[in-house]
Image 1 (cartoon, rainbow, N blue to C red):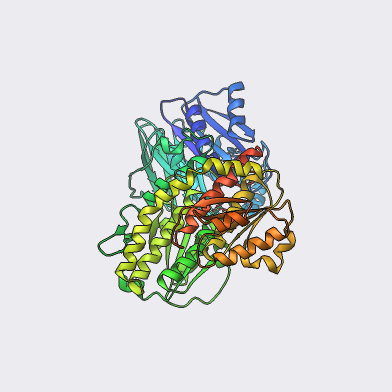
Image 2 (tube, rainbow, N blue to C red; image 1 turned 90 degrees about the horizontal axis):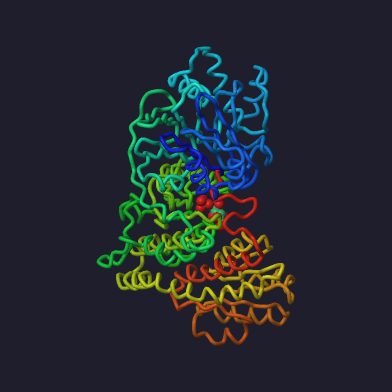
Length: 617
Ligand code: F6R
């Protein structure tokens, strides 16, 4: 939710800030704004809507300067308006602040500040934070404001705050100084030559530098042209590590594709290769997952696995339940992170928890992780974003290595999550029940997966035509059995989130228990029906739909002619073992949703009301 960027250096700040904001637009796109500090004056520009509106405003009312902060907003407190757009100012108008996160006790703080004469111009929790820092400075009553004074005021204010924040701050009396702090919301410092950057995500920085410091919770940063300092919220310096970002500007641009979503769908052969790279051991016929930080004997003592996540990551977890139970014969449960965090279900002592999150910042998933750790369960993470909060707070885990995912609808992260779960199932299976022959067979199949994905992608034009054919339908059903039931849920989620059409996913056999009432000539059913042990059952269900004049789009295994006879349209996927079908069957559904939404004129990369990283409850 929300993205922030800061810059200090020799270059003009506005182009750097706007470029960074555009790369963070996936985090929110209700309004955007910036402040430039020049010659002891703050110049603020804010606009409702997309970044392009702010860029237009800046063409009409240009500002120059070499230090600034900016923000793209996903509204939480207060509606979408210019007054609520960041940056917000303190009472004196000398301090400007941008914020990503939620201040939970903002109401009490606001009342208190009003009592001290503060006049609020917005409904946001962020303005409370700006006023609070300003108030702490006022209480000191010293001028001019020095770096130490401002850091002291920030420390005092931030200690009073409940909730999460990643902030950027500038002050009129501190030219050339950029300040930041974080707790619970990501913040990265970018180190350039004679320039420094702050951002919510490295994607905003990689066109300028790959040298970064991922700030930890309760850390503060002060940056100027030639240097920076990192200190703790408690006071005192902090040790830090300078990391080199693995990807560059190329990976965070759309390249030849019209949308990030399409680019990311087509990246899947490579993202899956990257997920597997160095993790397949033909010698031991298993997967190598050193990041789990668990020996084989520790893994063997696990009695039960719990998988948890939100949205698409939850669908991956549902597939994982089937994979781990069937491959490793280990009881596995899957739960929404938002439910897990508040439930008090009994969890046996030897339960191993995996939370799954592309961003590694999802508030509910983080809270579920914290709750499981509090109760003493070993809790691991499957994340894409390196150095994310979830990755850092877990006892270990597996990075997906899928590369940056910028399209708001999750695509390549889902297939990498399912692939990681396959690797986990193989690893646990090999220390329980799978023979080395079986392990080797699984490895062989995994190695062939990227090529099979390429084959699916090669049918993209046919899927686009199919999407156009059904684009006038107003309601869709997605049906699948066993590990393909979550695939049906994922297909429905993709379609509804980017095309805004009602679409629901169901276990195919549930059709006759109520859902069949929805079937009519205008309600297509997308049935995932690979050539597996339940194919005949699926075939009967398709007949039932057809008998009620419902159109059927089937996803089936190449060469299965009986499917062609009953379905109106068939999308073919290559023959594959059951554990890999969810990956292959999901990709055509991503393409179907994408092309359908495009033909309806929807903004697929930035669907309404959504943001990629959900850091609020
Ligand atoms: C759907 C989608 C969301 C996310 C969910 C969890 O396309 O993107 O449902 O999957 O918000 O996000 P992460 O994986 O970042 O925790």
